[in-house]
Length: 391
Image (cartoon, rainbow, N blue to C red; front, side, top):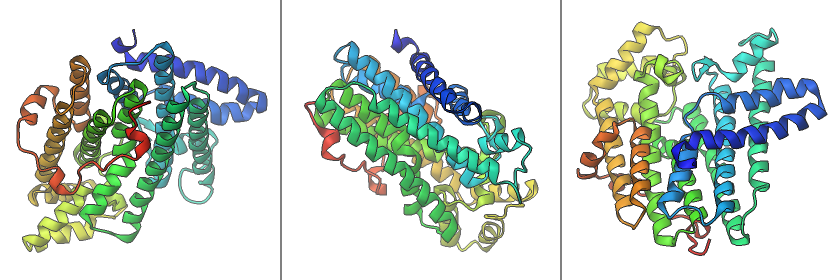
C-alpha cells in the first residue's frame, strides 16, 4: 500500500524509469551513460526525504484520493518527475553557488572533477562544472519525459501540463532572483521573501499539493485552501533552510554551515538583521555585517561574530517567530475546508517537518495568533487551470 511508505513507492517507479533511460543512454554511448546518465540516477535515488512526493500524495489523499488505479499510477509518476526536478535544481544550484558538499558528500561538480582528475577550482575547473550542468539538464529532460509519457484524461492532462510549466518557470525565476540579489547586494526583505518563495517554497510544497488536488478532482475552493496552506508552509521551509545554513549542524544538514554568509546571499535572515541594526543605530552590528558578509575567505572565528550579530540583532528570533506564524497559517488554511482527517494529519506533520518544528507543537501553534497574511505573503490566487473543479 502506497500510503504506508510513499517514498518507497516512488522509488520503485524511479527504478523503472531509470532502467529504461539508462538502457537508452547506453545505446547512445557508453561514456555518456556512465558519466552523465548514471550520475542522474544515482543522485536521485540516494539521499533526500521525498518531501515533494509526500506532499503530492497526501494532498491527493486529503482531497479524497485517486479516482481509480490509473490515477494512482499517474500520481506516482508525477512524484517521480518532481524528484528529477529536485535533482536538476540541486545540481545546478551547487554549480552556481560553488558549493563543495551536498547531502554529506561531494557536490556533483566536485565529484565529477575528482573522477576525471580535473581541478575543482581555478584554471581547468570547467570540466566538473560543465558536466554537472549537463547532468542537471538531463534530469530536467527526463522529468519532462516522465510527465509527457503519463496517461491522463484530456482535462487533467491540460491542467497538469500547465501546472508543470508554471512550476518550472517559477523555479528558474527564483534561482535568478537568488543570483540577482547576491550580485546587486540587495538588502530588501521583500525581495528575500519573494526569492525564497519562488526558489523553493512553490515547487517544494505548493505545486506538489496542487498536483495532488488536481489528481483527486478537487473543487476550486478546496484547491485554493490546500495551495494557500502550501504557500505558507513552503516559505517556512525555505526560512528554516536559511537558518540551518548559518546555525545548523553540517552532520545533520549534509552541507557546510555559513556558505550563505560567505557568498553574500540575500536571505530574509540577513535582511532582517541589517534592518534591525539600522533601526537601533547599532554601528557595531552593522560593521560586522558589512565587513564579513560576502567574504569568501571568512574564518570560523569571523563566522561566529556574524552568528553573534544575527542573534544580538534579534534577527534569528524574528525569523523563528515568522516560521511559526507561517506554520500556524498553513494549518488554518487546511481547517477551512472539508478534507480527509487522516490525510490532514499527515499534511500537518509534513508542514512541521518542513518548518523544522516538532509535530507535537502543531496544535498549539495553530491556535496562536498569526500575522502571516499581513506580512505581504498571503498565498496568491492560483491561475484558472489550478482551480478547475472538473479535473
